[in-house]
Length: 601
Image (cartoon, rainbow, N blue to C red; front, side):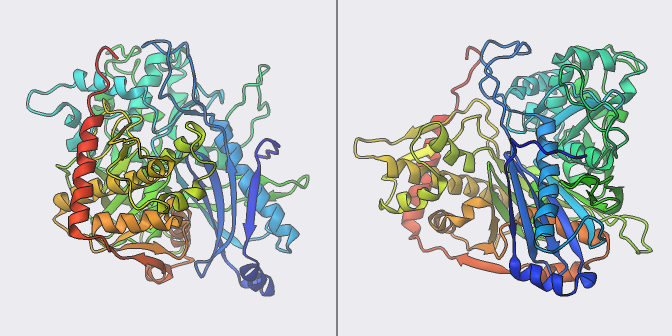
């Protein structure tokens, strides 16, 4: 599994104090690894048995935004298309693991032949979907990223094919899935792939090959590559890379609940849902066993924390012949936002967290029963605890559910200001710019660049700045961009309160934007609720790590609760009248963003 491509720069950070403690008695140490695959980079953490982070490694990978494509049947423009090379994702994960081992070896800790690492957990960007053939190893097409908008038309088609007179078109699958039909979810990407990729259509219609077709989100891809074996031929003559062979083909309940294919009650793939999504596809013949997506093409659904997911075949290190993590248990799989919920210790009903990343994701633990939303939120699976090493319990615990509101643009709005508009050089300067003006002076930025997600679900919306006057300057625009994340979080926060009848007492937060004190204070002000940042901001990776450690007996559940510690709490200070004025202006701005995309455009 070696990879040493120099184009991937890897940053490894080691806590010297924690390392010295481990080196004083390495035989007594237990470490848990955590793979965190995000939208723009992958990370690898090593976590001690006391819940401290020993090391972090990060590798960014290329974002693919096609300008044209032979598969674009709508027109010449591919605006809104977003793809990842799945091998770039695998490389980024493997390099993080290899460089961690290399750097720790330089500092005196040898992981190559050690049993110090007890398990590895995996957390991932959800919904991003890839298809490959496990016999040939060929990947049919790039992974389609969760925020890709090409499948908006696909979602419209699915709604028309399943039209019911007494049900809102978006809700035709919600009773079973807890989700609206939207471009966001993995099944719409599956449908686009089988509608547009001839090689995939051919294999699905082949009696021999259809059983080798595999669809997976990034957790499934990483697990498959980690637990599989390198082929004797890893590249074709045209430099096309091949997937490993013999890997575990699995996903967990939290990721499976994001497809539109899983029944929330049975926690299993539902053939009627697969048919509802795929029956109008180009390769659907209507005949049994031909043209559609067989259930064998979907990964096995397992609990989020489970010691039987699989074992790592080994990651080759820089030294010739040295292999690390061989036979280490993959102890957990969690979608990134569910991992952050778990990492923020939101383990009781009514506890909520908000992650500020590329997008913005607010989740509330709703307990052991799924809560149906009438406010534009998603009903999703938070996590499930399964088989634990050494435990006599053979049956998994009941799944824990959550309500979720997903917003497409948060941190990516700041990236837009930096990379597309050239208004700033780095995200770090936004706080001082925002504080350099007293307010946004009634100017609002609505970042509906690919439509509005929760709670609106309006793919026809587009980004806008409203209320502009000649007195507005760069600082006002930057401030409005930061405030837009807080406003969108309040939209979700209020929808969650209406759905659950629970007044949330605090909001736990994580993600890069929580370093921005202005934004966090504004968030507390506009919510009129305390905002709490934890000691470690790596809550996504920590959540996957905690779940993996739970699966192999490094921790008990009660111990995990004690490990979470708050760092900073922002309390609301804004006057009620000012809050109401700001909120009214934001809602007017959102109204202006709607209806920009129609059948003629």
